[in-house]
Image (tube, rainbow, N blue to C red; front, side, top):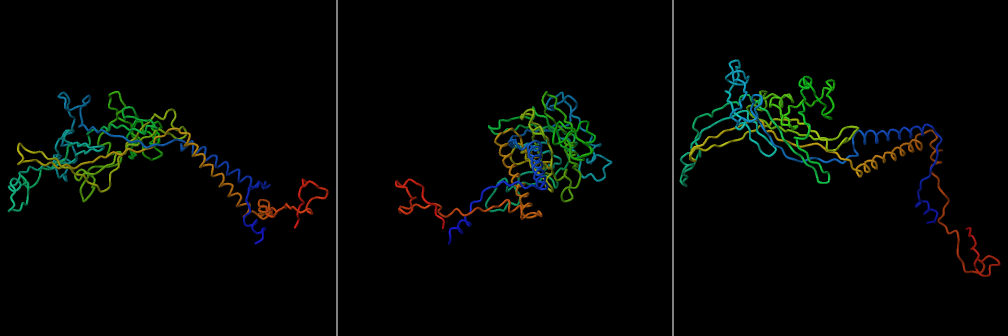
Length: 425
């Protein structure tokens, strides 16, 4: 194989700058550069805030469910406080209401202590109860190896006592929560020091609200023309903090939900219960302004989502004076489980440099597109290609050759310090 062929095979490719005097290509490249600059600076950095370091919060939640009370009362355990329930004859789903022809069950008044069951990040709001008194059977009382036991407990009646919880929609719910981030991010906040609102997909509620806000920014007013969700005006607890509360009815209406609508197996949510996700979404960023004036300025929104075709039931057992009698209370209702979501932003130089480096790769893409048009599409593509790509002469052969022969020395060079002769083969 000749040396020239190897030079062609392993030719070194280097960049050559060629000015193609064609305004069409020049304007196209300029348009690409302007579009890339707008995309990087305006959209990626300013609008999307991609120069910020983002971190998801983690935290805990405390629930407080209260029966409807007269103004000024906060704790029904205090003797001077009075409840403000509606009369059962006025409640549409209560059997005591003579206007209701299809009401299956009577209603019973329960206070907040009896209605709620709180666990880690979740709360049961009871809507229906069944009460059954039981007595331990003989085999349950005294088991022997010679007999089979068909029941450990015998029911005191054929059917349990069934009833709905009266006026559960008027109960008020407070969700107190706190979140934290990593030590490097350095942000911890409580609901007591943050602005928060309930998100609503109910257009009527949004339109009738005195001061609805946009879900993307709690300080921006909601526009009715958007027909999208809004943030409802909060009801403050009134203890000097930013804690908010809302009624169970408002919570359901915010997502156009009704407890008496058919849910599963021809049963309503009030009867079968359901599981709800309560999403608490935190944010401290805005389009264009980022985290200004401070990344510590955090707000949140709360939205609920029912889990389709879900039910929920729990049991409470109360034993008598001895272990031979007990009362089993079956509760169905809304199981509210909280999920903390959202991304909190903070300025970070490394994140910004990575975003710029990634985005600037679009410039290389623009150059490749314009070069491809010039080399393979334009009318004068052959001329452009010839101007862009040029092959040099082969430099693989030895241009100079050393020799110790006297004939190879320049004539008159007696000490051998003259340059060697050029060899042309």
